[in-house]
Length: 397
Figure 1 (cartoon, rainbow, N blue to C red):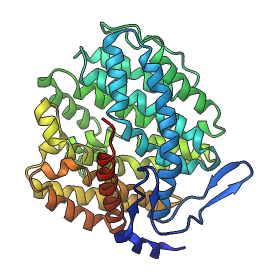
Figure 2 (cartoon, rainbow, N blue to C red; figure 1 turned 180 degrees about the vertical axis):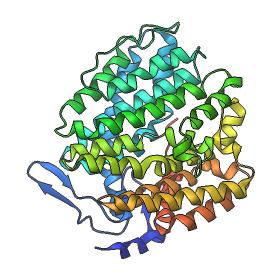
Figure 3 (cartoon, rainbow, N blue to C red; figure 1 turned 90 degrees about the vertical axis):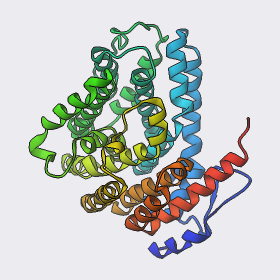
């Protein structure tokens, strides 16, 4: 089965009996039984990838999230409980998308999903505490995000991450998330090979979260000064808001951990992954996320990096640049077809969001970017639109 199976793009449909099963008109030759466990080879076509994601990845993500929802419901502090539950119920698609990388972990794909869901839940929870909660204190934000560094460092002790805020007692919720990640990483034979890159990506992420959530008048000056501290590396190819967006993704971390769980990791591969994912793959991810949220962020008064493009023509030009650079950078990686499908999926899935229809020139932007990204993106786009439509039709109120 080769890449010609992408010709099924226009024929992909969703089984109306469930929104978790994708029928794509192909036999799943890539899925085979090995002993009592499920072994999945790294897919090279988007129909096979989508079939595996709907039948295996999403159900496992739901199982993990259900566990954390139960833990969040036990939080006694009303503010922390509200933000913990909202971060899961409103952002579960972050965990679903990130967990696609579990495929790289091969036999250990359930372990990879456990780590990815826990780490992404920390990220989304802390984002809510910074963005929708009671503090504008950068010292508070820095302490909160110490949890993300500790989660990536198995030997670090759990701390009082709420030290600088009014709300204190979460019943051990955040600490449990951190320990889950630490326990996952402590099993890695090749942890030392990825530690440097994990912490490098985490620090960029945490710095961004601190700078963009302070009082409004300080946000842009802080972000520009932060970008200028990396002047020699990125000034020639990125604007400050693009660098910021590139720092806001967890995809590189999930890729590193999943490969390490699959037993395929060296220091050179870790370096190649970091260079391939940052800034362009991660930047494409977050710029698309900001693009579809423009109206929502305008209503809420939130910072949106897409607002700093002069017009839609410049936005399209720069998005295409990120697509082209992503395509170029990932060529150095093993399983390059998988990584190509990741950026194809990002473009197709985000632009299938119903919010795009409410944006000025949303149709034009979608058409041009799908064309620039390639036919796989159109496959993901059509399937995502069908999934969203069916999900709405069968939603339980």
